[in-house]
Length: 93
Image (cartoon, rainbow, N blue to C red; front, top):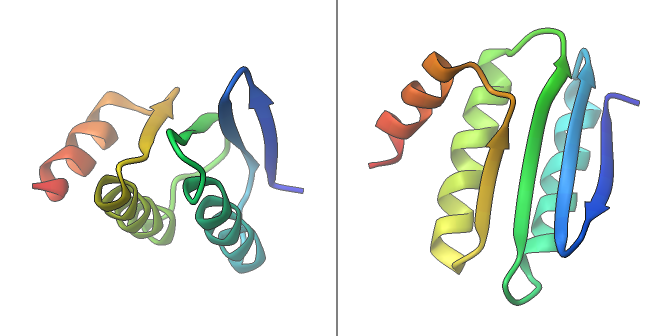
């Protein structure tokens, strides 16, 4: 499995591991939608064990960040390359 969902305190962590495929993207999106329905939701995407960061994953992250912002949920990106973080931040505004 390339996406493991774990809980740390009151936070939900999506650990992205190895290679991701379309089924993983679907699981991520459905899991994310479920989590952010909760009040004061905090979601973390952990990239420490991800092998490659695809354009599809970047697009999905952009969409999820926008959705989190709209509903007031907090979304954190852990172990993400600083240049990728800068790119995503520039697309959010």
